Each structure stands twice: as structure tokens, then as C-alpha cells.
Length: 372
Ligand code: PMP
Image (cartoon, rainbow, N blue to C red; front, side):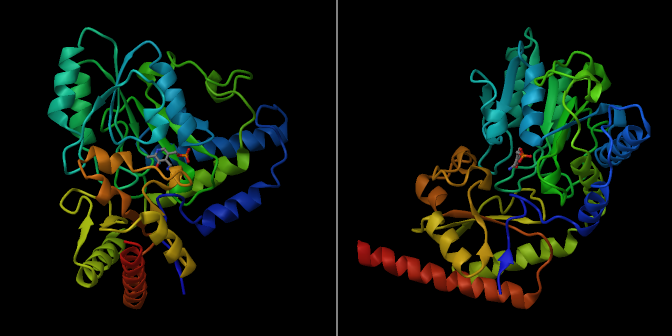
């Protein structure tokens, strides 16, 4: 028996989203065509736009469908072309790699953006046009960022606020309007929808100042050219609707039981962000004297799929910039894995996983001793 424990890398699709997509394959028209088949496709897209908008407290006309969060982040940063960009040290690479001269705000040892430092930075640069990009929830640690406070500070200094909320949707409530967020990124495959689709939600205030990165037809009100991915958009809409109802209370209990069981078997571990506000499904654990890659492979052989550091960058054996930014030293960072739950687990599943993990750790430590 194995378990897929890598929800934050890509969530299993929910059945209603699959069903809606399969049904949508029969939709014939191009949404830009004015005949009946075209209008049918267009209308299905608009229904999904409403579902996505309602999930994030935005208006349907604020939603621009994209190929996913990476493109949404790039589009948001296109708006920042001539602005001074301030972002945090724990952002996803699709934010960090956008602008080489971005000012990087550190995080505290608890993995939370240093608000005082952000305010000082905004004050120091208050005469510039400012663009701030801070994620809502970190993908590796699950640590929740103080977006309400960030938003207040940003607007005090007239800065535009972009939030990468990819790991927040379906985990915590995020309302673009209530939080006064200017640009918000989400991705479908992190909430049980299909891969290759996401959106950038843009407030009315700045919509007409946006520039496209993909030029061509006038789709998405001129901001994102190209025939819309109708089936993906439909699957995304359904997943966005259901994500409003995800109840993570049981998942949180499973995550906590899992951590406590591991701690009992292997006391010498570091549970990253244990005392920070965290989303319910994520656990980032560092094992001493272990190389995470070896652990991930050994767990996979037993049928358990987890990731080392950020799965988006797996394949590259690089240390997690998130954990380094939190001040952990290399030896801790190298032995850290991320377990992210898709659902609550029963007691026997937790025990079996923990026992398997324990045996693997013992084996790896033994091998290491022999090599030394
Ligand atoms: N931002 C965050 C916080 C993410 O976790 C990810 C995916 N790991 C992305 C952006 C990129 O998302 P996508 O796969 O939709 O391009």
C-alpha cells in the first residue's frame, strides 16, 4: 500500500472536474465565433469565469485565464516593467526570476515575511512607483503570510500589491476585494483541476494599464491572445467552486498525528514552521544526517510519493532557498522533505507510513556510517 503525499506539487483531480471536462470535449465552436457553436463555447467559459471569481472574491471581468501560475506571475510582472519591485526571499522561482534587480525582503526564523523590514523598504523608496509581490502561503513549508498587514502597508505607500495565492486556494479563505489586492495569481492543478490553466485576477484600478505578453487576437479583453483552452477552463471552474468547500479539519488532525508519530520514532528531527501559522495539509520535516533525495527515492520504492524541497524544481539537486532564507544551515536543508496531504488519513495509514519511514531512515543512517 502506498500513498500520494505531494498535493502541493499537483493535486489529484476531483471527479466533478474530470466529468465536466469529458463532457466539454463535445463543445465544437471557437469561443470567438459568433455562430451558435462559438457562442456555446464562449458561454461555458464565462460560467467558469464566474465560478473562479467568486472563489477569490473578485469580479468575473477581473479574471484573465492563462496557462497557469507561472504565466500569471509573468503577466503581473509585465505591469511592473518600469516600477521598483519589492518581493520576499521565499517566493516561488516564477516570481523571483522575473526581475533581477528586485529588492528582496527577508523572512523571520519562523518563515514569515519581515513586516517591519517591508515597511522600512517602502518608506525608503516612497518616491518611486512601487510594486510588491508577496505570496499568500509558501509552497514548501505551508507557512501563511500576513497578507492583510502587507496590503495595508502597501496601500499606505501607494504600492501595487501582487499576491501569488497558488497554495492558499482551498486551504485558507482569500478575498481579493476584502484584502484590497491589485493582482492575484492562482493555478488550477493545485486545487483539483486540470494542469495547464490558471488565472491572473486584476483589480479594475489597473486593468487597463496592463500590457499583454502574448500578442495576437483580442481574447481575454485584449490581455491574453490565443483561442481559449475551453475544456481546461471548464475543469478549472468546477475545481474552483469545490475548493470553497474543502474542509481541512480532519486533514489537519492527520498532519499533526503524522508529525507526532514521526517525532516519537525519530526524535532528532526539525519540523519546519511548527509554531508558525500553517495550512492544514503541509508538513516540512528535516532529518539530520540524511540526504533528502535518497529518502524520497527510498519512500517512492515503498509506494510513498513525497518531495524534497520544492517539487517544481525537482530534478535539480539544489538546496531549498526557502529554508536557507529561514536561517537553517545546509545540513538541515539537505535532509528536508515535504509531505503534503490530499485528504485525511486513517490511523493505520499513518502508522504504516511512519514505520516505513523509520526503517528507511535507519537503513540510510547505517549506510552513511559504513561509508564514513
Ligand atoms: N507559485 C507557487 C507558490 C507554486 O507553488 C507554483 C507551483 N509549484 C507556481 C507558482 C507555478 O504554478 P504552475 O505550475 O501553475 O505554473
